[in-house]
Length: 101
Image 1 (spheres, rainbow, N blue to C red):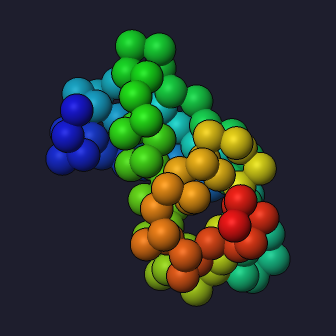
Image 2: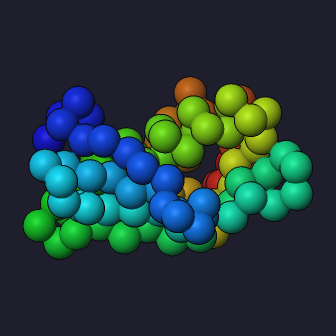
Image 3: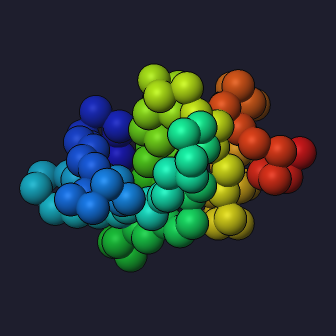
């Protein structure tokens, strides 16, 4: 699946971002804004029919973009998302140190 096939939407409560493909929610990340300068990712859920690491990566990229725009740092308590941070040093400018490095 290509990232161009997916749209992203922040949930009504502002603490979840959805990945949507052809009108169907195929995954989401739960996150919390901590104070004025941090975002903590707590959990990822991906529809079993779309279980690829790419969906999680695309969601993380959206959170990273939001963090950069809002001048925030990002940390993850989700082991899958923490692994994405380890594998993608291009996120280091917003990554907090608890993400495995």
